[in-house]
Length: 293
Image 1 (cartoon, one colour):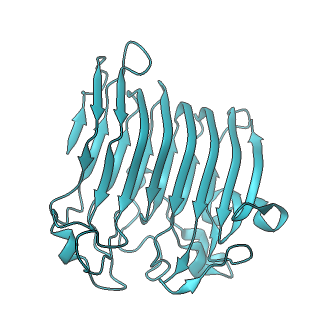
Image 2 (cartoon, rainbow, N blue to C red):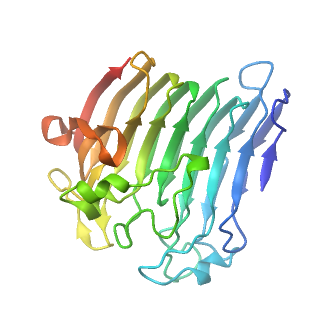
């Protein structure tokens, strides 16, 4: 919908105080795609610019997506930072609405994906949140040179009813998670929920993440996941096919209502850090995960 540069272009683009949304249910919509890099760091930047799908009177999604148990495919992806991009983002909220800001309509929004990063030229995320998407909130694929500070995620309140990836079909071209390993899991339904963060790919390198809050409040709107000991989701951070020396550093990971803080290998993988072994914060806190440092 909104494209910043063509692949390989170098230039300057500063976007401030913008709202990106959809006017209707648009299953193929990518709200923002960034291709451009700058000759200087920070030449391509977003400040105080937010993404909203549903939840407001300016979009038909406010009234078209009300059926409990049947989230609508309101948008494909909110933000795509392509392999040629170099982007600085400060203060951004990527929100699939869980409530109506302008009325009292039920909001059952099934946006497919939050932010997808393939950039190798530099990405800076400072004070960002991505909430209530079906497959993932943040995903990188073969990305390099990423700095993240103050990152927040909420799992959709309706999951696992229906279970992810419903209503979407995973698309391998976009390196989507397929949740295929959940069939082997004793808590299958709580495995089929949005990943807060996925770092994927053999060429992944130099990712530094400082300070995350990944929260799960409900299962199917009603189950209270508890401040300290509740478990409403099996896994929330997925590290897949990373090289051993990827220079990936994850510091101060905070979770609520989650059993595994870090998982290696997706839904068919294994727990590298569990909440039970790392109590604190709003349920669990991991000072650092350096398994791919």
